[in-house]
Image (tube, rainbow, N blue to C red):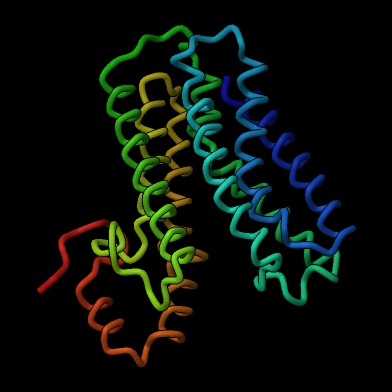
Length: 257
């Protein structure tokens, strides 16, 4: 049944976010906000693995893949925030616990929704299923997405570390203005495709997970905020305007003429 893993995942997500919220409020710090996002995915996935230890490794692989992704992303984000020590998204919030709590509640909910394919796979009515076409295709999509996101983050990090100024327009960033977000979206679609053969009728609603993260990145808190910030910084630069005109916003594509 999907309902039991879903309840367990929800409790786990709220427990870990509640703990991080208490620490962040007590210390009035932003250092753990990004780290808490990735660790929430890892923590919930570990709980699902432990409570379904008798299931087939094929059924639990999405949870293991999520831990790998969360570990990589968490290390990257934590290294970044350690340098800045402040996240201006929380200006005016971190000193007001009730306002600050809203962020952690919404983050816990987002983690649960994004993890729906992982949760549905853990609660699969076919816990001993084998590895077939959909599993192979989903794993391939996940791997491509993971590599694209990791490469894009690494290229951006090296660019800044080497004293790069202005906007990034080399490597994967030559083909997409937000290749890291494309990679993240793709890997979650891969998880869903992987989980498909073992899903119950209600389990197919787990498609809301990859739909949610894709919509979030494309239209809500991902690309729109970064595009607005980049326009404010570099909008007067003709090179930036040309880069923006020629370069796909999301899916990596050859630059337009």
